[in-house]
Image (cartoon, rainbow, N blue to C red; front, side):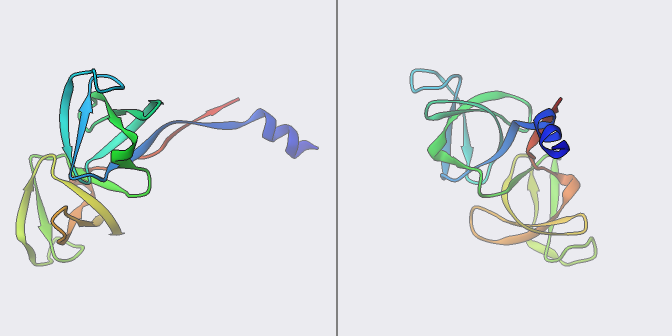
Length: 151
């Protein structure tokens, strides 16, 4: 009986969830529909934070905190994505700062990746062109599910 009462008192409601762009280019708009102006074109693996939804559209927030709308069919909850949040980030062939530099040594801010694995404070990532690299966790933005506990 005590367990049932506790379950009724505590509940978890999701406020925001991570999304990842699956199309080569996703068109983001100022509102939930084609009549709204285009605000940005996001590349494959661009991470977004889902704030709410309306019909076939998600209201999302990007790495800079800008709110826009994206079609549901252009994104997924099933892939974890990150984007470079620093001016430029070093890519390596292994998960440490002494590992060999990758063929592409550095990438610019906003470069998106699919997150494949992690080791310590390093993420193994895949670029939209198919190559894999290791990048420091503190060099990227990774939207996480945000939950609110209510009493």
